[in-house]
Image 1: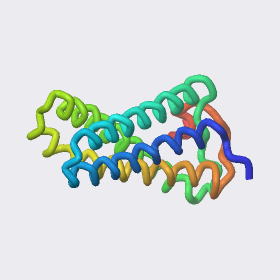
Image 2: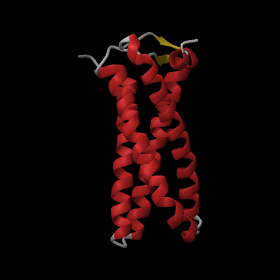
Image 3: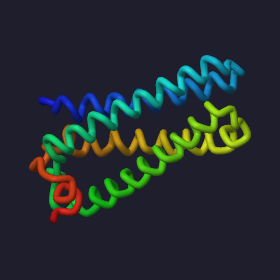
Amino acid sequence: MELPLLPTISTFFIVLSALLVAVGWYLIIQKKTVAHQKTMIAAAISAVLFFIIYISRTVFVGNTSFGGPDELKIYYTVFLIFHIILATTGAVFGVITIIAGLKNNLARHRKIGPVTSVIWFFTAITGVAVYLLLYVFYKGGETTSVFKAILGV
């Protein structure tokens, strides 16, 4: 089985970011604030690297449509839209959480940090599921514009 390079690399970075968030969460529970901060910045950099690769591929190559059975396409599409909403929400929460931490607004950071982490874990899990459905379990469909890949138009 030959896996596509850019989607595989971008998926690696999103998984890495989630793992780093988990480590960062553990570190702050251990009261290791500096290590927590460095780990969470590394998690953010990993997420940004994912985003750069994803956007670059979308712009220069296009997106891969679902290549599995037609009877599963609607479920895949709903799942993909859920993942996109989750990822967008997680990214916005992530930026707000990081800014609050860096500005030493610890009350806000402590309040939304755990919520952000949970959203990010689900984003990573659903992102891996999308990757598996597009490239591992089924052979990807045509590579085309993002709107056609998602909505079929």
